[in-house]
Image (cartoon, rainbow, N blue to C red):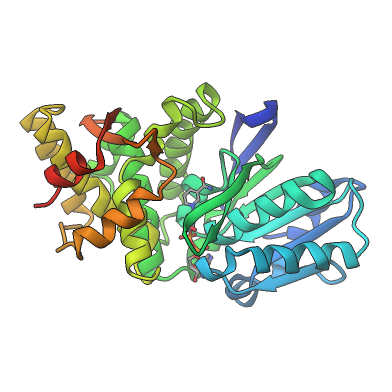
Length: 347
Ligand SMILES: NC(=O)c1ccc[n+]([C@@H]2O[C@H](COP(=O)([O-])OP(=O)(O)OC[C@H]3O[C@@H](n4cnc5c(N)ncnc54)[C@H](O)[C@@H]3O)[C@@H](O)[C@H]2O)c1
């Protein structure tokens, strides 16, 4: 078992445990984490079907369909009302079992219910294991754009069991690898080198646990430096300026991690345009992405993407805080106009 700690926003401490089989006896695991406090489980309905042991009998719970469609004010209200009808008190714990979409929704609701109750995250997608379950960012979408309403509410506990990935589709696994590649390219030379040699697959629990631990260690370093994203934490947004716009333009049919990888290709060209990266490092990044069967795709209408990017949180005083890869495991934030960014990125 690997154990990591992360001190996030408002000084809230998260304990993160990573081990295959960590959730096989889930009722016992919950009793250990919650002690005398009452848990309420929010679970992805696909995950509940594939892993019935995660919903022990007698627990108050709500099953929801995952995806961007659950990250809405209406779903947040439904969850809050269900918890209120259950009579949950301030000592209750919200346990969120699912991928990043349910994690973002559940985290927000935990921060709102009775002005905030404790949260346990049990991430079940690779993306949620390497990224969204740690760091405390919560969000729902508005019709005007993605993740436009949210809070910082770090989980007290994050339980990562690689065995839960067995039921994940190859497409979602690949999407998760997109966020792993982001961490390697932007933040961790060690993870970059590991991914150059490794061939992670859904059934290789030991390798996945090592990759998850390295990706999270890189993320934790940044989150502890800047828990509320006013400086260096913006580096975690590598590939996200264009990535979020692509997700919106595809009406969220494009998985998040795939969109982020296209955003990394774009940001790499912008970095080359500003001579922020040398040719050798740029070639290493392209060959790492190609190793995971990613290639640059044709972009949809740039004017439409521009509209989505304008409403993005990464705009600062009319300028874009663009994250540019600058080497193996290195990146920097550079302020520029949206026009400059868009002009340099296309292949
Ligand atoms: N808060 C953060 O810091 C942060 C960081 C990165 C991404 N995100 C958010 O995370 C979301 C994407 O996360 P995601 O890719 O996990 O999406 P998701 O929660 O929609 O899950 C993707 C799909 O995988 C299925 N699934 C999940 N676990 C499964 C399992 N073990 N077996 C079978 N099916 C399973 C879900 O039902 C869903 O169909 C986006 O909304 C993104 O904005 C948040």
